[in-house]
Figure 1: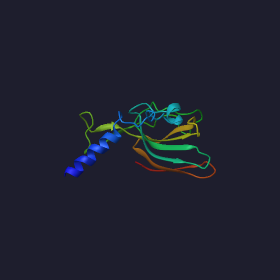
Figure 2: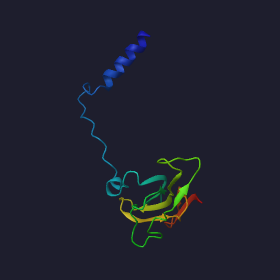
Figure 3: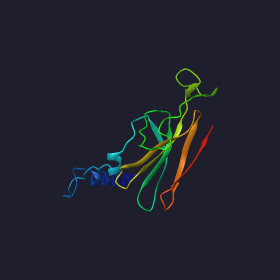
Figure 4: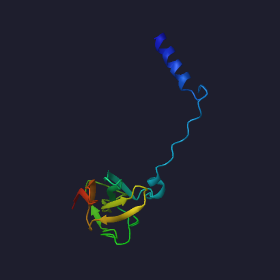
Length: 146
């Protein structure tokens, strides 16, 4: 037990910021550039899958129950499909009705700039859960729909 306390005390001393052996202080990690250039408003969407193609483009897939997801010009589906879902087993806000999710797909270039962003879904529940991309830059989305 005495050895364990000494070891923990020694490690605490070595890891202590005041005992840095003259090393420069650690700098906080900068946010990746794609995170600085593109971010979804809090509570708007849940990203459930991501992949990167050979060119370094980033593909995101997920689900949202919001009509405020930013879509790109010429998007496959520029507007939220909407709808109200019902579940006898789920109570949200005092009731069994809740907004239905739409899936979404977002493609970013290697610097984080949006190439495209689109909804995928109708008036019922739609979920995007996984994504893959081929060498030609085509996106393949897996998920489910009601």
